[in-house]
Length: 407
Image 1 (cartoon, rainbow, N blue to C red):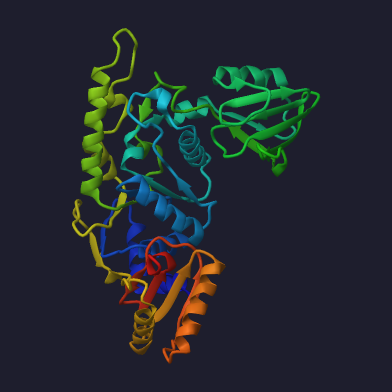
Image 2: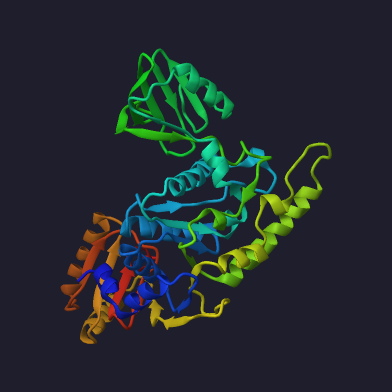
């Protein structure tokens, strides 16, 4: 049986599933190590009818879990919500790729489609976002067979501060050639090619910037501007105001997240006080979310706290008996002894490899050791990159990762 199936059928998964259905419930789920959390999120999300928002302590850890979940669930249902600023009030230092990812999440939530898992971290939630009303007002929605002129789209894109170029290469650009408009929206990772037949939209498709080849056709699309720059003087709100009230929040460590928000808000206040007078800027309270606001708003949601110490008073406490993957210092005879011992004790061994080459590498190593009368009993290799291995005592599974074994 695969690790995914084991987690899906586990008793505590079913307990968690029942708990997160209760709006406003606080659950303390302690004891998760490494990628055991990724498998647990996948198992919970499989039958969920709510959005999940995972808030990690920092960007690096968020990125590792994002990679796990994209493989375990699907890239279509796992979204990354990063920060757009390198430093508060340094608008010219926004990261266009991150702005696109943030806009994609807002657009997806605004479209009210199927539930998604949103992976984020403290600094990203620190930045407030344009209100749903403002995003609706400044979103251009078009579909195949719409009666619309090229001139109209041209005017709207200028209004959205899009730049007209010969060939689009990054979000915020568009080009017009005859009856074709290419536009790189901030809500999609690839640009759109819109073809007209007179004043009617004949076709819409995404295309690759480098090769100019079509990727997929679309019946309808939304085009939105840079939501971080365009609405500098518009009303903003916490991302927690933007998401659905029945979203489940998974907080890696509430205190660490709170401390990080306090620290970053202090930096934003210092930066604001040094700004040039005469130029109007929104205050830190309007632009960013301090820790007390985060905690107050988070309290309205169903929360799963993952740290050993909880912040909110739990309705349910569940402890998971999970340990880190052992270290072998590249001593493969010790690895074999460990695998055999696990099998004798009723545990199932899984080795997760980043590619087929690594799988073959293990086979060769184990084969050479077999010649030395060091045979291995039972293990299963799985080709999938994984963040960190773990030992799950209750489910009797041991998950190893190739990069930790080879260090």
